Every structure is written in C-alpha cells, then in structure tokens.
Length: 69
Image 1 (cartoon, rainbow, N blue to C red):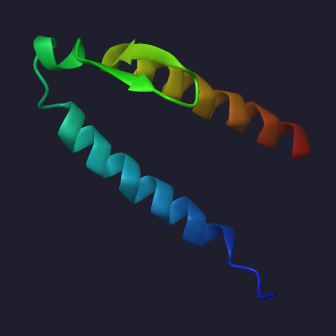
Image 2: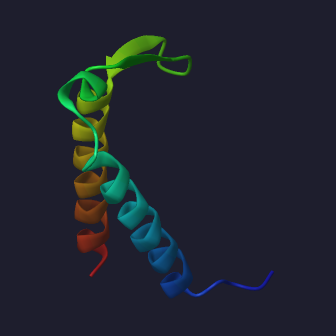
C-alpha cells in the first residue's frame, strides 16, 4: 500500500478550516444557537457548543502528536 505524504493531509485540513472560518464568520447570534441532534452521541447540541468541542478536540490531538517528537 502506498503511503500518502502527511503534507497532503495537513493541506486538506488547512483548506477545510479556511472554508469553515469563512462560513462561521458570517453567522449571526441566532444561527450560533441553532441545535442539531447527533445520533452517534445521542445528544442535542448548539453550533457554538460543537465548535468549542471541536477546538478542544484539535488541541487534544496536537498534544498527542507533541508526545511523539
């Protein structure tokens, strides 16, 4: 199996996050408070709660990676 260079995955994440930033910067307060049901977690969450969790989750993964170096 051919390995994909890590730079490809990092570039994908960078561009995905750029798109999210553009979208999220244009949301108003009411849109941030919208909720959705996550069937995997079986919980309802607001977009602002989910973004905070996503930010924490990214930092958590970075901490794991820093242990490798």
